Image 1 (cartoon, rainbow, N blue to C red):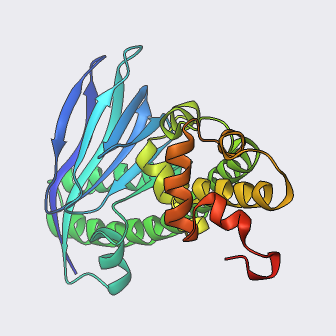
Image 2: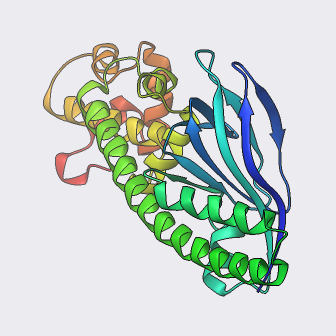
Length: 266
């Protein structure tokens, strides 16, 4: 395994510093030493504070910004690996675009040692061997942190998906604003849509429509309410739009569905 060190050291950034979206062929490890910053991956933003970090896989577009309250100091390592083991290739090569880490004390020590060995000009051969060994240790630690990151992300995603499910189940007859729901939970709407689809198997709008159709069918079969009132109770302000959606999803108009014998309901 051969390591090409592209950048290794501590970088300080002023308040409101911004680095526009970019991507590179190598991996990047950033650990926040003090202050706060935000790494953005498309519409997904990851807020980081001291003791936290992120591993950016090669080829992943990302941008970087510092908060408006205080400067930020980061230990940064940009590197490329030739002939890496399969686990390391998956970790660094984009199987996941990035991993967010917390409690990064061990990674911080590793980077400090790597910097020290790389800067040692007294015993170059000895320092190079120590650098290689320390890098192997870093890869192992990154794999452990990545597994923990996936577990934590999975729990967080499950809570978000379950929360949105509960919200839709209780408020399906109201105006639903997925963008506002995402902002309330401090996540992007694209991230919310992605995790809901992953955990539920339907996107949020299709699930909401299914809930509304079930409510409409229940009212059509078990009440004499006019279609306009059923549309309102199912979450539609326009009876015409409700009828169009109902026909598309059920295959019959609301009145046609209501006229079916209960045993032959579509």
